[in-house]
Image (cartoon, rainbow, N blue to C red; front, side, top):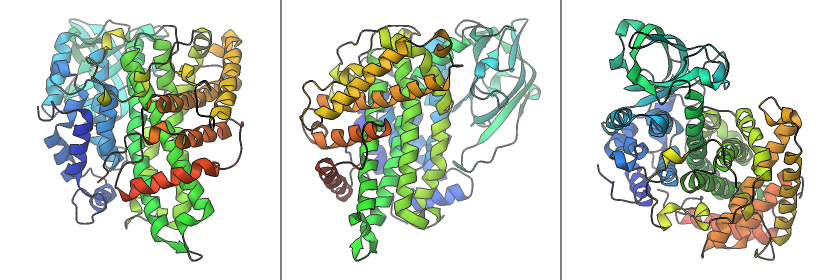
Length: 563
Protein backbone atom coordinates (compact mmCIF):
# COMPACT_ATOMS: atom_id res chain seq x y z
CA UNK A 1 0.00 0.00 0.00
CA UNK A 2 1.56 3.35 -1.01
CA UNK A 3 2.65 5.72 1.77
CA UNK A 4 2.60 2.97 4.42
CA UNK A 5 6.23 3.62 5.34
CA UNK A 6 5.68 7.37 5.75
CA UNK A 7 4.76 8.99 9.06
CA UNK A 8 1.35 10.55 9.43
CA UNK A 9 2.97 13.98 9.18
CA UNK A 10 4.55 13.07 5.86
CA UNK A 11 1.31 11.56 4.54
CA UNK A 12 -0.60 14.70 5.53
CA UNK A 13 2.01 16.82 3.73
CA UNK A 14 1.79 14.63 0.63
CA UNK A 15 -2.00 14.89 0.60
CA UNK A 16 -1.79 18.67 0.94
CA UNK A 17 0.61 18.86 -2.01
CA UNK A 18 -1.71 16.65 -4.07
CA UNK A 19 -4.66 18.95 -3.45
CA UNK A 20 -2.61 21.92 -4.64
CA UNK A 21 -3.27 25.62 -4.11
CA UNK A 22 -6.70 25.89 -2.51
CA UNK A 23 -7.12 29.52 -3.58
CA UNK A 24 -6.14 29.03 -7.24
CA UNK A 25 -9.37 29.40 -9.28
CA UNK A 26 -7.97 27.17 -12.04
CA UNK A 27 -7.16 24.29 -9.65
CA UNK A 28 -9.68 21.43 -10.20
CA UNK A 29 -9.25 20.65 -6.50
CA UNK A 30 -9.35 24.27 -5.33
CA UNK A 31 -12.09 26.14 -3.52
CA UNK A 32 -13.90 27.26 -6.68
CA UNK A 33 -14.21 23.69 -8.03
CA UNK A 34 -15.24 22.27 -4.65
CA UNK A 35 -17.86 25.00 -4.25
CA UNK A 36 -19.22 24.28 -7.72
CA UNK A 37 -19.64 20.59 -6.88
CA UNK A 38 -21.38 21.49 -3.62
CA UNK A 39 -23.80 23.78 -5.46
CA UNK A 40 -24.71 20.82 -7.69
CA UNK A 41 -25.28 18.59 -4.65
CA UNK A 42 -22.48 16.17 -5.55
CA UNK A 43 -19.03 15.35 -4.25
CA UNK A 44 -16.10 16.52 -6.31
CA UNK A 45 -15.26 13.73 -8.76
CA UNK A 46 -11.66 14.98 -8.93
CA UNK A 47 -11.52 15.04 -5.15
CA UNK A 48 -12.79 11.49 -4.79
CA UNK A 49 -10.38 10.30 -7.48
CA UNK A 50 -7.47 11.90 -5.62
CA UNK A 51 -8.47 10.26 -2.34
CA UNK A 52 -8.83 6.91 -4.09
CA UNK A 53 -5.32 7.23 -5.54
CA UNK A 54 -4.03 8.21 -2.12
CA UNK A 55 -5.75 5.15 -0.65
CA UNK A 56 -7.43 7.18 2.07
CA UNK A 57 -9.40 4.19 3.36
CA UNK A 58 -6.11 2.60 4.43
CA UNK A 59 -5.91 5.32 7.11
CA UNK A 60 -8.86 3.65 8.87
CA UNK A 61 -7.39 0.12 8.79
CA UNK A 62 -5.00 -1.03 11.56
CA UNK A 63 -1.44 -1.66 10.43
CA UNK A 64 -1.66 -5.29 11.50
CA UNK A 65 -4.45 -5.74 8.94
CA UNK A 66 -2.48 -4.07 6.15
CA UNK A 67 -3.51 -0.45 6.67
CA UNK A 68 -1.77 2.66 8.01
CA UNK A 69 -3.59 3.18 11.32
CA UNK A 70 -1.10 3.12 14.20
CA UNK A 71 -2.17 6.14 16.27
CA UNK A 72 -5.32 8.22 16.36
CA UNK A 73 -3.74 11.65 16.32
CA UNK A 74 -1.99 10.64 13.09
CA UNK A 75 -5.34 9.73 11.54
CA UNK A 76 -6.74 13.09 12.67
CA UNK A 77 -3.79 14.92 11.14
CA UNK A 78 -4.22 13.26 7.74
CA UNK A 79 -8.00 13.73 7.67
CA UNK A 80 -7.65 17.37 8.67
CA UNK A 81 -6.16 18.04 5.23
CA UNK A 82 -9.40 16.80 3.64
CA UNK A 83 -11.70 18.67 6.03
CA UNK A 84 -9.62 21.81 5.57
CA UNK A 85 -10.88 21.86 1.98
CA UNK A 86 -14.33 20.26 2.02
CA UNK A 87 -16.31 18.80 4.91
CA UNK A 88 -18.58 17.02 2.46
CA UNK A 89 -15.63 15.29 0.83
CA UNK A 90 -14.26 14.23 4.20
CA UNK A 91 -17.59 12.78 5.32
CA UNK A 92 -18.85 11.60 1.96
CA UNK A 93 -15.74 9.87 0.70
CA UNK A 94 -15.55 7.73 3.75
CA UNK A 95 -15.01 9.02 7.29
CA UNK A 96 -18.24 7.11 7.93
CA UNK A 97 -16.16 4.02 7.13
CA UNK A 98 -13.92 4.94 10.07
CA UNK A 99 -16.93 5.27 12.37
CA UNK A 100 -18.32 1.92 11.22
CA UNK A 101 -15.02 0.05 11.24
CA UNK A 102 -14.10 0.80 14.85
CA UNK A 103 -16.99 -1.39 16.02
CA UNK A 104 -15.43 -4.28 14.11
CA UNK A 105 -11.83 -3.52 15.16
CA UNK A 106 -13.06 -3.37 18.77
CA UNK A 107 -15.27 -6.48 18.99
CA UNK A 108 -15.33 -8.30 15.66
CA UNK A 109 -14.01 -11.78 14.98
CA UNK A 110 -10.72 -12.19 13.09
CA UNK A 111 -12.75 -13.21 10.02
CA UNK A 112 -14.93 -10.09 10.24
CA UNK A 113 -11.91 -7.86 10.71
CA UNK A 114 -10.13 -9.42 7.72
CA UNK A 115 -13.24 -9.08 5.56
CA UNK A 116 -13.82 -5.42 6.41
CA UNK A 117 -10.14 -4.59 6.04
CA UNK A 118 -10.18 -6.13 2.56
CA UNK A 119 -13.28 -4.12 1.62
CA UNK A 120 -11.68 -0.84 2.71
CA UNK A 121 -8.24 -1.53 1.29
CA UNK A 122 -9.91 -2.35 -2.02
CA UNK A 123 -11.45 1.13 -2.05
CA UNK A 124 -14.88 0.11 -0.76
CA UNK A 125 -16.92 1.97 1.82
CA UNK A 126 -18.69 1.02 5.03
CA UNK A 127 -21.74 2.67 6.58
CA UNK A 128 -22.88 2.66 10.18
CA UNK A 129 -26.53 2.75 11.26
CA UNK A 130 -26.93 3.58 14.96
CA UNK A 131 -29.86 5.94 15.16
CA UNK A 132 -33.50 6.16 14.16
CA UNK A 133 -35.29 9.45 13.63
CA UNK A 134 -38.00 8.61 16.16
CA UNK A 135 -35.47 8.19 18.99
CA UNK A 136 -32.57 10.50 18.12
CA UNK A 137 -29.48 9.94 20.27
CA UNK A 138 -31.35 7.53 22.57
CA UNK A 139 -30.34 4.57 20.44
CA UNK A 140 -31.12 2.07 23.24
CA UNK A 141 -34.79 2.66 22.44
CA UNK A 142 -34.33 1.72 18.80
CA UNK A 143 -36.99 -0.46 17.22
CA UNK A 144 -35.00 -1.87 14.30
CA UNK A 145 -34.84 -5.58 15.10
CA UNK A 146 -32.79 -8.67 14.36
CA UNK A 147 -35.06 -11.54 15.41
CA UNK A 148 -33.65 -15.05 15.99
CA UNK A 149 -34.29 -17.41 13.09
CA UNK A 150 -32.92 -20.71 11.82
CA UNK A 151 -29.19 -20.27 11.33
CA UNK A 152 -29.17 -16.58 12.24
CA UNK A 153 -31.50 -13.58 12.26
CA UNK A 154 -34.30 -11.87 10.36
CA UNK A 155 -33.86 -8.10 9.99
CA UNK A 156 -37.01 -6.05 10.28
CA UNK A 157 -37.37 -2.28 10.32
CA UNK A 158 -35.93 0.97 8.99
CA UNK A 159 -32.69 2.88 9.54
CA UNK A 160 -32.77 6.45 8.26
CA UNK A 161 -30.15 9.08 7.40
CA UNK A 162 -27.20 6.78 6.75
CA UNK A 163 -24.25 8.27 4.94
CA UNK A 164 -23.26 6.25 1.85
CA UNK A 165 -25.76 3.45 2.54
CA UNK A 166 -26.54 3.24 -1.18
CA UNK A 167 -22.91 2.73 -2.22
CA UNK A 168 -21.39 0.96 0.78
CA UNK A 169 -20.09 -2.59 0.51
CA UNK A 170 -20.47 -3.14 4.26
CA UNK A 171 -23.13 -2.05 6.76
CA UNK A 172 -22.65 -1.99 10.53
CA UNK A 173 -26.16 -2.22 11.97
CA UNK A 174 -27.20 -1.54 15.56
CA UNK A 175 -30.24 -3.74 16.12
CA UNK A 176 -32.59 -4.89 18.85
CA UNK A 177 -32.09 -8.60 19.57
CA UNK A 178 -34.19 -8.73 22.75
CA UNK A 179 -37.45 -7.24 24.01
CA UNK A 180 -36.30 -5.94 27.37
CA UNK A 181 -35.14 -2.40 28.18
CA UNK A 182 -31.50 -1.39 28.35
CA UNK A 183 -28.31 -2.12 26.44
CA UNK A 184 -28.43 -5.91 26.85
CA UNK A 185 -31.27 -6.07 24.35
CA UNK A 186 -29.17 -4.71 21.47
CA UNK A 187 -26.42 -6.12 19.29
CA UNK A 188 -24.16 -5.06 16.43
CA UNK A 189 -24.28 -6.85 13.08
CA UNK A 190 -22.00 -6.70 10.05
CA UNK A 191 -23.64 -7.22 6.66
CA UNK A 192 -23.53 -5.93 3.11
CA UNK A 193 -25.60 -5.82 -0.06
CA UNK A 194 -24.01 -9.08 -1.24
CA UNK A 195 -25.07 -10.86 1.97
CA UNK A 196 -28.84 -10.29 1.74
CA UNK A 197 -31.59 -11.04 -0.80
CA UNK A 198 -32.16 -7.99 -2.99
CA UNK A 199 -35.95 -8.22 -2.57
CA UNK A 200 -35.71 -8.03 1.25
CA UNK A 201 -33.92 -4.69 1.51
CA UNK A 202 -35.01 -1.34 0.12
CA UNK A 203 -32.79 1.70 -0.31
CA UNK A 204 -34.74 4.79 0.65
CA UNK A 205 -34.78 8.15 -1.12
CA UNK A 206 -31.93 10.54 -0.55
CA UNK A 207 -32.27 13.25 2.10
CA UNK A 208 -31.35 16.78 1.01
CA UNK A 209 -29.48 18.92 3.51
CA UNK A 210 -28.51 22.56 3.87
CA UNK A 211 -24.90 21.61 4.62
CA UNK A 212 -22.62 18.92 3.14
CA UNK A 213 -24.86 18.90 0.07
CA UNK A 214 -22.70 16.40 -1.74
CA UNK A 215 -23.08 13.70 0.92
CA UNK A 216 -25.43 10.85 0.02
CA UNK A 217 -27.66 10.53 3.07
CA UNK A 218 -30.19 7.78 2.48
CA UNK A 219 -31.79 4.97 4.46
CA UNK A 220 -32.35 1.23 4.48
CA UNK A 221 -35.60 -0.66 5.04
CA UNK A 222 -35.44 -4.39 5.75
CA UNK A 223 -38.44 -6.73 5.38
CA UNK A 224 -37.86 -10.15 6.96
CA UNK A 225 -34.31 -10.12 5.64
CA UNK A 226 -32.28 -13.22 6.60
CA UNK A 227 -28.76 -12.83 7.93
CA UNK A 228 -26.42 -15.61 9.10
CA UNK A 229 -25.34 -15.89 12.74
CA UNK A 230 -21.78 -15.13 11.62
CA UNK A 231 -22.89 -11.50 11.07
CA UNK A 232 -23.00 -10.89 14.84
CA UNK A 233 -20.17 -8.57 15.99
CA UNK A 234 -19.11 -9.61 19.48
CA UNK A 235 -21.59 -11.32 21.78
CA UNK A 236 -25.34 -11.01 21.46
CA UNK A 237 -26.75 -8.34 23.74
CA UNK A 238 -23.45 -6.46 23.96
CA UNK A 239 -24.27 -3.86 21.31
CA UNK A 240 -24.44 -0.97 23.75
CA UNK A 241 -21.01 -1.81 25.14
CA UNK A 242 -19.50 -2.18 21.67
CA UNK A 243 -20.95 1.18 20.60
CA UNK A 244 -19.77 3.00 23.74
CA UNK A 245 -16.25 1.61 23.40
CA UNK A 246 -16.20 2.77 19.78
CA UNK A 247 -17.54 6.19 20.79
CA UNK A 248 -14.48 6.67 23.00
CA UNK A 249 -12.49 6.71 19.77
CA UNK A 250 -14.77 8.42 17.27
CA UNK A 251 -15.90 11.18 19.63
CA UNK A 252 -12.26 11.99 20.32
CA UNK A 253 -11.13 12.03 16.71
CA UNK A 254 -13.89 13.59 14.62
CA UNK A 255 -13.88 17.06 16.25
CA UNK A 256 -10.11 17.20 15.75
CA UNK A 257 -10.63 16.74 12.04
CA UNK A 258 -13.08 19.67 12.08
CA UNK A 259 -10.27 21.97 13.24
CA UNK A 260 -9.04 21.95 9.64
CA UNK A 261 -12.38 23.44 8.57
CA UNK A 262 -12.06 26.34 11.01
CA UNK A 263 -8.41 26.82 10.03
CA UNK A 264 -9.63 27.61 6.51
CA UNK A 265 -12.35 29.92 7.84
CA UNK A 266 -9.76 31.84 9.85
CA UNK A 267 -7.48 32.06 6.80
CA UNK A 268 -10.34 33.29 4.59
CA UNK A 269 -11.31 36.06 7.01
CA UNK A 270 -7.68 37.01 7.56
CA UNK A 271 -7.23 37.35 3.78
CA UNK A 272 -10.17 39.70 3.72
CA UNK A 273 -9.02 41.67 6.78
CA UNK A 274 -5.56 42.23 5.30
CA UNK A 275 -6.85 43.27 1.85
CA UNK A 276 -9.86 45.38 2.80
CA UNK A 277 -9.41 48.97 4.02
CA UNK A 278 -11.82 50.97 6.18
CA UNK A 279 -11.25 54.38 7.77
CA UNK A 280 -7.85 54.54 6.02
CA UNK A 281 -6.69 51.39 7.78
CA UNK A 282 -6.70 47.72 7.00
CA UNK A 283 -9.57 45.88 8.65
CA UNK A 284 -6.98 43.77 10.45
CA UNK A 285 -5.78 46.90 12.24
CA UNK A 286 -9.22 47.80 13.61
CA UNK A 287 -9.43 46.89 17.33
CA UNK A 288 -12.56 44.74 17.10
CA UNK A 289 -11.40 42.76 14.07
CA UNK A 290 -7.95 42.25 15.59
CA UNK A 291 -9.49 41.01 18.84
CA UNK A 292 -11.80 38.56 17.03
CA UNK A 293 -8.98 37.12 14.92
CA UNK A 294 -6.68 36.79 17.94
CA UNK A 295 -9.40 35.10 20.00
CA UNK A 296 -10.15 32.70 17.13
CA UNK A 297 -6.48 31.70 16.95
CA UNK A 298 -6.32 31.10 20.72
CA UNK A 299 -9.53 29.05 20.76
CA UNK A 300 -8.38 26.96 17.79
CA UNK A 301 -5.14 26.08 19.61
CA UNK A 302 -7.02 25.13 22.76
CA UNK A 303 -9.42 22.94 20.78
CA UNK A 304 -6.50 21.22 19.09
CA UNK A 305 -4.84 20.66 22.48
CA UNK A 306 -7.96 18.96 23.84
CA UNK A 307 -8.36 16.88 20.70
CA UNK A 308 -4.73 15.77 20.89
CA UNK A 309 -4.96 14.88 24.58
CA UNK A 310 -8.16 12.90 24.06
CA UNK A 311 -6.82 10.84 21.16
CA UNK A 312 -3.53 10.19 22.94
CA UNK A 313 -5.39 9.14 26.11
CA UNK A 314 -7.37 6.55 24.17
CA UNK A 315 -4.07 5.28 22.82
CA UNK A 316 -1.87 5.39 25.91
CA UNK A 317 -4.37 5.07 28.78
CA UNK A 318 -7.14 2.86 27.33
CA UNK A 319 -7.67 1.11 30.67
CA UNK A 320 -8.54 4.47 32.27
CA UNK A 321 -11.97 4.35 30.71
CA UNK A 322 -13.56 6.92 33.00
CA UNK A 323 -10.93 9.34 31.71
CA UNK A 324 -11.13 8.31 28.06
CA UNK A 325 -14.93 8.38 28.06
CA UNK A 326 -14.95 11.77 29.78
CA UNK A 327 -12.29 13.17 27.47
CA UNK A 328 -14.14 11.89 24.41
CA UNK A 329 -17.45 13.35 25.58
CA UNK A 330 -15.76 16.63 26.53
CA UNK A 331 -14.11 16.89 23.12
CA UNK A 332 -17.35 16.10 21.29
CA UNK A 333 -19.17 18.71 23.39
CA UNK A 334 -16.64 21.52 23.74
CA UNK A 335 -14.65 21.51 20.50
CA UNK A 336 -17.61 21.78 18.07
CA UNK A 337 -19.22 24.35 20.38
CA UNK A 338 -16.12 26.56 20.47
CA UNK A 339 -15.41 26.12 16.77
CA UNK A 340 -18.98 27.05 15.85
CA UNK A 341 -18.79 30.13 18.04
CA UNK A 342 -15.44 31.03 16.50
CA UNK A 343 -16.87 30.86 12.97
CA UNK A 344 -19.88 32.96 13.97
CA UNK A 345 -17.58 35.60 15.45
CA UNK A 346 -15.41 35.57 12.34
CA UNK A 347 -18.48 36.06 10.15
CA UNK A 348 -18.96 39.49 11.75
CA UNK A 349 -15.55 40.57 10.47
CA UNK A 350 -16.32 39.25 7.00
CA UNK A 351 -19.67 41.04 7.00
CA UNK A 352 -22.16 40.53 4.21
CA UNK A 353 -19.59 38.63 2.16
CA UNK A 354 -20.15 35.48 4.16
CA UNK A 355 -23.59 35.22 2.54
CA UNK A 356 -22.07 35.05 -0.94
CA UNK A 357 -22.20 31.71 -2.77
CA UNK A 358 -19.41 32.57 -5.20
CA UNK A 359 -16.08 34.35 -5.12
CA UNK A 360 -12.98 33.76 -3.05
CA UNK A 361 -14.76 34.17 0.31
CA UNK A 362 -17.69 31.87 -0.52
CA UNK A 363 -15.82 28.95 1.05
CA UNK A 364 -16.44 30.58 4.43
CA UNK A 365 -20.21 30.36 3.97
CA UNK A 366 -19.91 26.75 2.82
CA UNK A 367 -17.89 25.77 5.89
CA UNK A 368 -20.36 27.68 8.06
CA UNK A 369 -23.18 25.52 6.65
CA UNK A 370 -21.18 22.29 6.84
CA UNK A 371 -19.69 22.61 10.33
CA UNK A 372 -22.91 21.84 12.29
CA UNK A 373 -23.01 18.38 10.70
CA UNK A 374 -19.65 17.62 12.32
CA UNK A 375 -20.94 19.14 15.56
CA UNK A 376 -23.77 16.60 15.69
CA UNK A 377 -22.51 13.47 13.96
CA UNK A 378 -23.64 10.48 16.01
CA UNK A 379 -24.08 12.56 19.20
CA UNK A 380 -25.14 16.14 19.80
CA UNK A 381 -23.84 18.32 22.66
CA UNK A 382 -26.59 17.34 25.10
CA UNK A 383 -25.97 13.64 24.48
CA UNK A 384 -22.27 14.16 25.12
CA UNK A 385 -22.92 15.91 28.43
CA UNK A 386 -25.31 13.07 29.32
CA UNK A 387 -22.40 10.69 28.73
CA UNK A 388 -20.08 12.82 30.85
CA UNK A 389 -22.42 13.23 33.84
CA UNK A 390 -22.20 9.62 35.11
CA UNK A 391 -18.40 9.91 35.03
CA UNK A 392 -18.17 13.08 37.11
CA UNK A 393 -18.31 11.54 40.57
CA UNK A 394 -15.87 8.79 39.59
CA UNK A 395 -13.47 11.40 38.21
CA UNK A 396 -13.86 13.56 41.30
CA UNK A 397 -12.97 10.69 43.63
CA UNK A 398 -10.20 9.23 41.44
CA UNK A 399 -6.59 10.01 42.24
CA UNK A 400 -4.99 12.59 39.98
CA UNK A 401 -2.18 10.72 38.29
CA UNK A 402 1.01 12.42 37.19
CA UNK A 403 0.31 13.82 33.71
CA UNK A 404 2.30 12.03 31.03
CA UNK A 405 4.08 14.38 28.62
CA UNK A 406 3.26 11.87 25.87
CA UNK A 407 -0.46 12.60 26.33
CA UNK A 408 0.16 16.13 25.12
CA UNK A 409 2.75 15.39 22.42
CA UNK A 410 1.96 14.27 18.86
CA UNK A 411 3.05 10.70 18.22
CA UNK A 412 5.17 11.66 15.21
CA UNK A 413 7.69 13.36 17.48
CA UNK A 414 8.34 10.11 19.33
CA UNK A 415 8.50 6.42 18.48
CA UNK A 416 5.01 5.44 17.26
CA UNK A 417 3.08 3.22 19.68
CA UNK A 418 2.52 -0.40 18.60
CA UNK A 419 -0.98 0.05 17.22
CA UNK A 420 -4.22 0.96 18.94
CA UNK A 421 -5.04 -1.32 21.91
CA UNK A 422 -8.63 -2.11 20.95
CA UNK A 423 -8.80 -5.02 23.39
CA UNK A 424 -7.92 -2.75 26.35
CA UNK A 425 -10.75 -0.24 25.84
CA UNK A 426 -13.01 -0.71 28.87
CA UNK A 427 -16.00 1.00 30.44
CA UNK A 428 -14.90 1.39 34.07
CA UNK A 429 -11.65 2.53 35.69
CA UNK A 430 -10.03 4.99 38.07
CA UNK A 431 -7.33 7.59 37.87
CA UNK A 432 -7.12 10.91 36.01
CA UNK A 433 -3.90 11.99 34.26
CA UNK A 434 -5.45 14.94 32.36
CA UNK A 435 -6.82 17.46 34.87
CA UNK A 436 -3.64 17.05 36.94
CA UNK A 437 -1.95 19.25 34.32
CA UNK A 438 -4.07 22.21 35.46
CA UNK A 439 -1.77 23.50 38.18
CA UNK A 440 0.17 26.76 38.67
CA UNK A 441 3.24 24.91 39.94
CA UNK A 442 6.19 25.54 37.64
CA UNK A 443 4.16 27.75 35.27
CA UNK A 444 5.48 31.08 33.91
CA UNK A 445 4.69 33.98 36.22
CA UNK A 446 2.46 35.67 33.64
CA UNK A 447 -0.04 32.78 33.54
CA UNK A 448 0.25 31.64 37.16
CA UNK A 449 -2.69 33.71 38.47
CA UNK A 450 -4.96 32.32 35.76
CA UNK A 451 -3.91 28.77 36.50
CA UNK A 452 -4.40 29.33 40.23
CA UNK A 453 -7.99 30.47 39.67
CA UNK A 454 -8.76 27.70 37.18
CA UNK A 455 -7.26 25.05 39.49
CA UNK A 456 -9.40 26.37 42.33
CA UNK A 457 -12.46 26.20 40.09
CA UNK A 458 -11.60 22.62 39.18
CA UNK A 459 -11.37 21.76 42.88
CA UNK A 460 -14.81 23.30 43.43
CA UNK A 461 -16.23 21.29 40.51
CA UNK A 462 -14.78 18.10 41.99
CA UNK A 463 -16.36 18.92 45.38
CA UNK A 464 -19.75 19.50 43.76
CA UNK A 465 -19.40 16.31 41.71
CA UNK A 466 -18.70 14.25 44.84
CA UNK A 467 -21.90 15.62 46.38
CA UNK A 468 -24.13 14.85 43.40
CA UNK A 469 -27.21 12.87 44.49
CA UNK A 470 -27.86 9.56 42.71
CA UNK A 471 -30.53 11.10 40.50
CA UNK A 472 -27.97 13.59 39.16
CA UNK A 473 -25.57 10.87 38.11
CA UNK A 474 -27.68 9.71 35.18
CA UNK A 475 -28.64 11.12 31.76
CA UNK A 476 -31.90 12.25 33.44
CA UNK A 477 -29.97 14.60 35.71
CA UNK A 478 -30.96 18.15 36.61
CA UNK A 479 -29.93 21.23 34.60
CA UNK A 480 -27.42 21.98 37.36
CA UNK A 481 -25.67 18.67 36.76
CA UNK A 482 -25.51 19.37 33.04
CA UNK A 483 -24.01 22.80 33.78
CA UNK A 484 -21.44 21.13 36.03
CA UNK A 485 -20.48 18.73 33.23
CA UNK A 486 -20.14 21.64 30.80
CA UNK A 487 -17.89 23.44 33.29
CA UNK A 488 -15.74 20.34 33.68
CA UNK A 489 -15.35 20.16 29.89
CA UNK A 490 -14.12 23.75 29.81
CA UNK A 491 -11.58 23.00 32.55
CA UNK A 492 -10.44 19.87 30.75
CA UNK A 493 -9.73 22.05 27.69
CA UNK A 494 -7.67 24.41 29.84
CA UNK A 495 -5.78 21.45 31.32
CA UNK A 496 -5.00 20.10 27.86
CA UNK A 497 -3.66 23.45 26.66
CA UNK A 498 -1.51 23.69 29.80
CA UNK A 499 -0.22 20.16 29.22
CA UNK A 500 0.72 20.95 25.63
CA UNK A 501 2.58 24.11 26.67
CA UNK A 502 4.45 22.30 29.45
CA UNK A 503 5.39 19.41 27.16
CA UNK A 504 6.70 21.61 24.33
CA UNK A 505 10.47 21.77 24.47
CA UNK A 506 10.92 24.96 22.48
CA UNK A 507 9.30 27.30 20.00
CA UNK A 508 5.96 29.06 19.97
CA UNK A 509 4.02 26.35 21.87
CA UNK A 510 6.50 26.50 24.78
CA UNK A 511 5.92 30.24 25.20
CA UNK A 512 3.27 31.82 27.39
CA UNK A 513 1.31 34.15 25.02
CA UNK A 514 -0.87 31.49 23.37
CA UNK A 515 -1.45 29.68 26.65
CA UNK A 516 -2.27 32.90 28.45
CA UNK A 517 -4.73 33.87 25.73
CA UNK A 518 -6.36 30.42 25.69
CA UNK A 519 -6.66 30.30 29.48
CA UNK A 520 -8.00 33.85 29.59
CA UNK A 521 -10.69 32.90 27.07
CA UNK A 522 -11.62 29.88 29.19
CA UNK A 523 -11.74 31.99 32.35
CA UNK A 524 -14.05 34.46 30.59
CA UNK A 525 -16.44 31.68 29.59
CA UNK A 526 -16.46 30.48 33.21
CA UNK A 527 -17.08 33.97 34.62
CA UNK A 528 -13.63 34.19 36.25
CA UNK A 529 -12.36 36.97 33.98
CA UNK A 530 -13.84 39.56 31.63
CA UNK A 531 -12.75 41.52 28.60
CA UNK A 532 -10.56 40.83 25.57
CA UNK A 533 -7.26 39.00 25.68
CA UNK A 534 -4.71 41.29 27.42
CA UNK A 535 -2.32 43.00 25.04
CA UNK A 536 0.76 41.32 26.55
CA UNK A 537 -0.56 38.07 25.05
CA UNK A 538 -2.63 39.40 22.16
CA UNK A 539 0.23 41.29 20.48
CA UNK A 540 2.65 38.32 20.10
CA UNK A 541 -0.28 36.08 19.20
CA UNK A 542 -1.25 38.41 16.32
CA UNK A 543 2.37 38.44 15.20
CA UNK A 544 2.40 34.63 15.10
CA UNK A 545 -0.92 34.62 13.24
CA UNK A 546 0.46 36.95 10.55
CA UNK A 547 3.72 35.03 10.30
CA UNK A 548 1.94 31.75 9.71
CA UNK A 549 -0.37 33.38 7.16
CA UNK A 550 2.52 34.87 5.21
CA UNK A 551 4.52 31.62 5.35
CA UNK A 552 1.47 29.56 4.27
CA UNK A 553 1.41 27.49 7.46
CA UNK A 554 -1.53 26.07 9.37
CA UNK A 555 -2.90 27.73 12.50
CA UNK A 556 -3.11 24.52 14.54
CA UNK A 557 -0.55 22.93 16.86
CA UNK A 558 1.42 21.51 13.94
CA UNK A 559 2.25 24.77 12.12
CA UNK A 560 2.65 22.76 8.90
CA UNK A 561 2.54 23.80 5.25
CA UNK A 562 -0.95 24.87 4.14
CA UNK A 563 -1.09 24.97 0.35
